[in-house]
Length: 211
Image 1 (cartoon, helix red, strand yellow):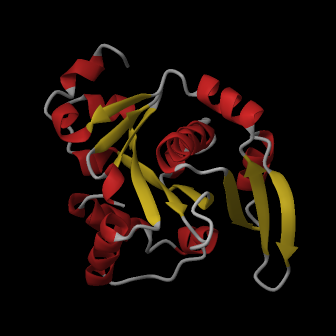
Image 2 (cartoon, rainbow, N blue to C red; image 1 turned 60 degrees about the vertical axis):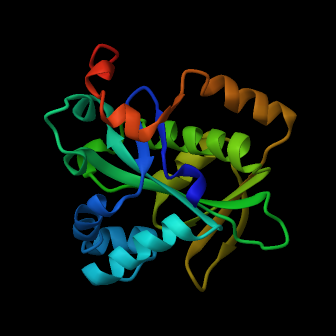
Image 3 (cartoon, rainbow, N blue to C red; image 1 turned 90 degrees about the horizontal axis):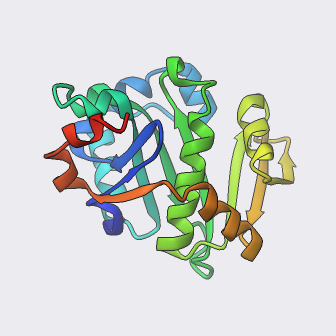
């Protein structure tokens, strides 16, 4: 989506930035992993195909993605941005007749960053952005039945099981954003800061004191 091409979201431990061409080589290396292919139900792409995919994420009106960065590492201006990457988070508008329905995906690609609550923080940040900037009123997630950690995380975030597809071996969970859910979500992400991406990149050192 064009809407987030210059948007940076700052959380406690992570920074979410637009998916740019400079991120593609690292992302491509991640997706060579059979484990990540299985967890994300993805097929391996060539590097050229990955660059094409990055462009589609930027241009298409039904996709919104952010790259997840380690905030502490990123605040060190001597670090290249691609060195700070730990995963990505996406929203798909899956129903052309209902732009308020979105499928949510999150991937923590770096194993060293799993099990630390980052997935939960990123999910809340992306949901908050989806609700306030994209008008999302219902979220769905599709998770492989073997990915018990992700299923447990979304259930802790009060997603409810909608269906199980034994053919594709995946579970669909959903959350409807009523007024009480919206209020709690915005409260839980009240410290999230939305910044100008290009301007903030030029002044990364300013975040160092906050880390």
